[in-house]
Length: 115
Length: 115
Image (cartoon, rainbow over all chains, first blue to last red; front, side, top):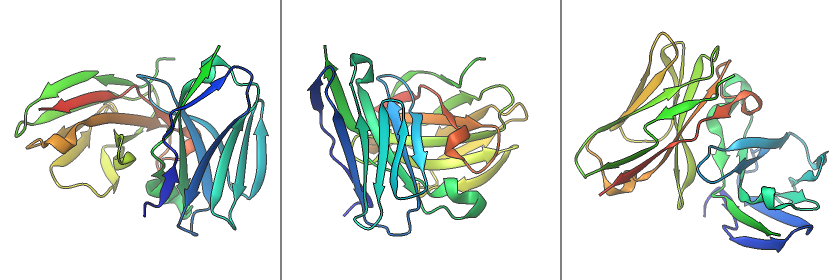
């Protein structure tokens, strides 16, 4: 079993829909959770990050973490065609100054928002 | 401000050959990290350089190596290429070491195809 699982999709939704992207993980040491967006032929860009369980909102995006279930989600409200991209989750055990070394990424979910 | 640049963008090699990829970080950034991205394994950390010194290394064979120059530009080299080395190789730069995700910016990647 991989440490981080993510439905690869592709996921197609109509414009304006609410999108739910999910990752599950097996390592209870993960404390720091991130979502990246990657457009075609581009590198990933950090969308959101959080240290704690619960919800964190940023505009149309909400990151949700449930550590007890080892499950994280990214919700996109009022989805737009410009949201069409691959979304990667990533997590880390947050071990001091070198916590960045131990990032584990999910394989990504490809999202298409149709006009 | 110019972003992270990677050259070449696309490369085709044959098994057994070696390849060198280049990354120029954002001006003022001294940390450069390299990642391999494949559909099956997702994004995996290769190594990080800061001030010309390798700080961290991922779980890759010795065929993968890198270096950083005094102007912070970095190169990675893969010797004796295998078919499984076909991937998108991403470089990310940040001002500080440790790959803090809030401060890390990815380049567009070099897509390597090994035949």
